[in-house]
Image (cartoon, rainbow, N blue to C red):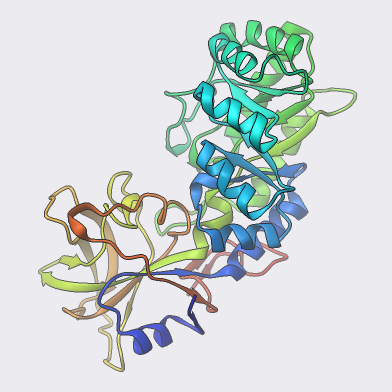
Amino acid sequence: MEKFSDVNELVNTLKPVNPVYCIRPDTIKNSIKLFKDKFPGKILYAVKTNPNEFVLKNIIKNGVDRFDVASINEVKLIRKLSTKSRLYFMHPIKSREDISSAYFNYNVKDFSLDTKEELMKILDSTKNAKDLNLFVRIAVSNEHAELDLSRKFGALPAEALGLIRLCKHHAKRLGISFHVGSQCMHKISFSKGLKEISSLIKKTKIIPDIINVGGGFPSIYPDLRPEPIENYFNEIKSGLKHLKLEKLPEIICEPGRALVAESGSTIVRVNLKKKNKLYINDGTYGSLFDAGVPNFILPSRLITSGRIQSKKITAFQFYGPTCDSLDFMKGPFLLPNNVKEGDYIELGQLGAYGITFRTKFNGFFSDKIVELNDKPIMSLYDDSSKINYLVA
């Protein structure tokens, strides 16, 4: 992988015709350090967020040895990089073949479920193994999340009671988990989730061995500026105290976006300027899915080679390179007014899901990836010891 000191050196050296994806490993180091220092439990990295091997190796290098996997291919990927890491199969619905392969071939003992039918499937596929750690995923409100994950998964309270009792009978260790939704913008969602667990403990008289508070920890975007991540941790600590248990269960979380969003950016080139619309060489079928479908506003900066940039800032919309009119990113993306064809733009906060959602639709695809040493456009992590907003 080629390395460059900063974005300007990259553009001036490569003058790329196709999009270039950039990875900043220092940002991964900083975010992991914060979670390791401040979160009151163990960290599982959600592999789906960014499965790039260079990213995963940096995550492992910085001390994360547990992973939230959602498919047998993610299981195989992590096992290829690390034979010692602990894998948690946290997708609540899995095929029998994948359960069996994960358990017998890859030493996966931790499985999530939200129905009795899935529990029976897990037991049958593992030949009624006695060393399973079973996590009952409960439904909780996603009202403060930018992306609602509550419609598809999660047992309702009445269903969860019976599931917890059943899993207690079959599991070596019992877990209860919830997920507050992706890019959660209010810390209270986590304490609300813990209140649901408290209610289940009181009704079942069963204390879980593990509580998984899930993911949903946010990153920073131009229009989404959450409280410092440490405030979320403090809310979780407060919620755990309100459980009023003599001994706390093991606590785990499964962050994705908060760990890697800042690490990735994409360099795009302008193919055409049409008033306040810029036609660029990457789009929603490429690394910019988040900017299109959920309409995340990405931080942007114009890269020019010596040309003076206008002080007048204009709100632009983007169209991607495909022939599909759905390849549209509303923005607004704030850039100097004198941006023109051939100019390069860096779009940040693409370490989460930027690589994951890329397709080869219409034949537009670029797998050029480089390493950068400079700071991201926006950051929640100014350095490895404190949280600050940094706007480059």
